[in-house]
Length: 211
Image (cartoon, rainbow, N blue to C red):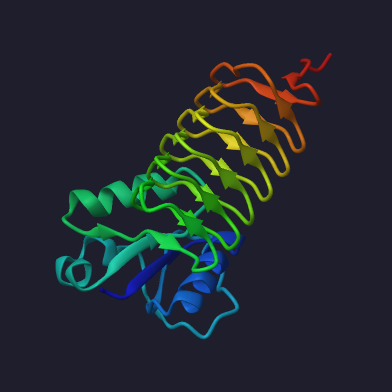
């Protein structure tokens, strides 16, 4: 298994989650790739390997798996640029997560401690499954989905690309959450959520537009 080169920008939580999960699983991280003018050094002993130019360096890409630890649109953009250049994107799963052998996990996804992913679930690329969330049987999470801590998805839920499920939210089985939709913290979702809509409350309803 190749060591991971972790792409970072400004200081944020995602790189720390990756570092912690890799340390717990014994997976080596070679060091950091800092990108953009907003790069802000993490509190870590990992060395800085260089800048964004390394993502175009064929020998470097051949020697490392890349994980883009940036929590915005650049995560997908940079990951797909690496793939187009023949590089590989790491998937990181904390050893304290429970992932069914029949589940499928996409490249560039991180699964944190305490997460449960049940049988025949499909988790797309570049997803973030945060602490102690549950993704039950036959769920389908499309690319770029972010599930916050302690959110719970019952069986058969489909979550569209780029959607966000807030902390402590609960979603009834066999519903669809639309692409780029947002489910607010603690919401209880009993009906499908259209693309791009934000829902809040119990039962969850579309957020009223500001006057």
